[in-house]
Length: 179
Image 1: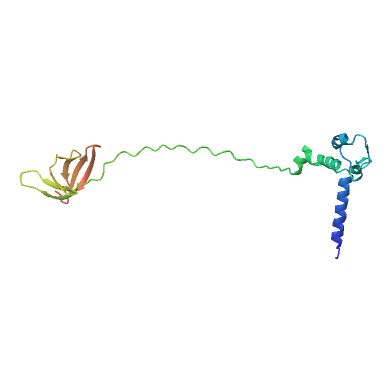
Image 2: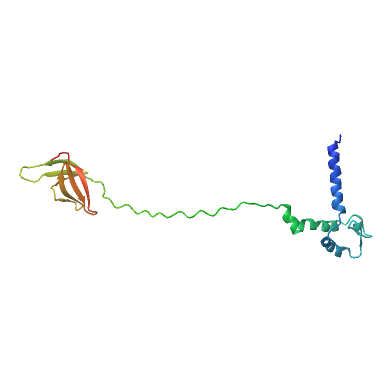
C-alpha cells in the first residue's frame, strides 16, 4: 500500500487534534462535576485522577465524558455553533379587498311567448290580431288582456305594443304590416 504525502499529513493532523482533546485541561465547571466521583484521588496535570484501581489506570472513561460534556452543553457555544441571521423583514399583510356591493339588476319581463299569425281588419270596426302561444290561438283587439298577464296597448308602425302586467313593462311584437 502506497501512502501519499497528503494521507500522512491528514493522519498527523488527526492525531494532534485527538491529543489536544484528551489532554486539554477542563474548565472549572467540568472539574466541579468530576470532583465528587474522585474524592480521594489527586489530580494529574492532564486532568485525570490518579488512583490505584484499574479504572483510574485506563483513563477513567466516565471522567473523560464529564470533562467533554461542557463543550456541548454551554449555551453560548450551542447558540453560536449554527447561528444564522436574516435581514428579511416580512412585508405587511395586504389590505383587505374592498367589498363591492353590486345592486341586483332590475327585474325584467320574460320574452314574449306570442307569435303573430295574422290580422283581420273589417271596414268600420277595429282590427283583430291573431296571436299564437304553443298550440293556442288568441284573437285580440287593442285594449284586451291575455290570461291576466299581458294587455294589448296599441298597434302602430307595424308593431303591437303589449304590457307585462306584473312588472308594468312594455314590450313590442312585430306584426308585419305598417299602417
